[in-house]
Length: 143
Image (cartoon, rainbow, N blue to C red; front, side):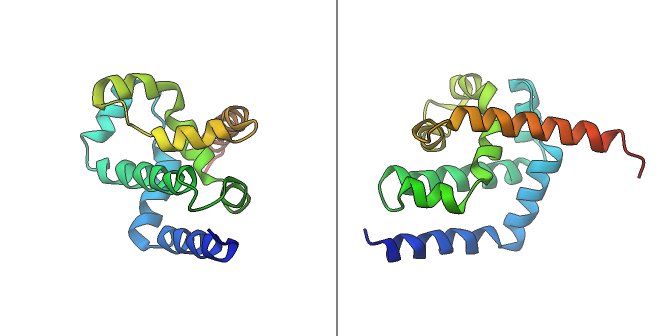
């Protein structure tokens, strides 16, 4: 695929992220979704916020599938996106349990992209740690 066509796909993905419902889902995902166990995950999946979680996770797994199947090169994708590391970091530690409960294909594309990226797991861990620090910092800051 030409670099021009890859760039068009990247821009289309960006455009999709700007959709108002997707923005709402992404905002909620990063501000409010902090699962530490499969039970935490299940509480959200069976709540009013189920759509938010499913929208964000399925979007990034779909985007990662475009990379896995060579529609977008990994380097171009990672040079123009970083949010997928944060998205995966929220569920990475419980993915095996989620797969056991919901099926083996859960986030396979996103995980494969993380693993194919040099230092991908390290970057995901760093993002997870940074987000935990930010939550703690803002939790201790008076409104």
